[in-house]
Image (cartoon, helix red, strand yellow):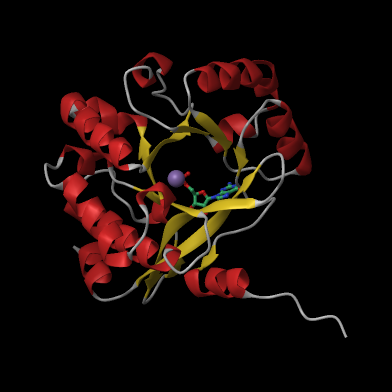
Length: 243
Ligand code: G
Ligand code: MN
């Protein structure tokens, strides 16, 4: 209830965290992250307020999607990734809602990516697959978020139109992962998908993930999430002219 009112009352802010291309370290895109500017508890991150299911989670995702499309449309050629709630993919109107948000903002579908948990594909498999297929056909990217956290089933991905896998922070920061991530990335590439390492916090982790073949890196080592206005200002800043 409180979250639904927060969305309606303008208490939700959308912050963005850069995703860099591993080889060039150029910023390739941003992940949109909800922040609740709570009247008494201060700035909250989603783990403190997002229920896994429910209408409030859907309303929040729809709000972030709308705002992220609007802001990204003002940015140069970078992608914007939005976290969708699992239930969303089972709504019959979901694909049309995404198409409308992009059209209202004037954002090309190729610049939008939707991040979903693998569990989304378990709930209503046929509906989820149909929605993902329509979105992919439009040019929208589909990324599997937090891969390696519990439910991961590579076999499931073989059947879905996924464009990217995001390796979970817990895997990226586990020194024991080094041995198998390279093989995993090679397999994923062979299936036509890209790989992002998320939650990269140190130079050593960035080097290991680049060495393993990951395409993109994201985490505090590169940048913390920042408000949209700060991103817009940074992207539009021109270098000082030399005297
Ligand atoms: O589940 P998802 O990957 O969408 O969650 C992203 C969350 O992880 C955000 O709330 C973001 O602030 C946080 N985050 C981003 N980079 C890092 C990092 O390098 N380390 C940790 N521990 N958390 C991070
Ligand atoms: Mn995410």
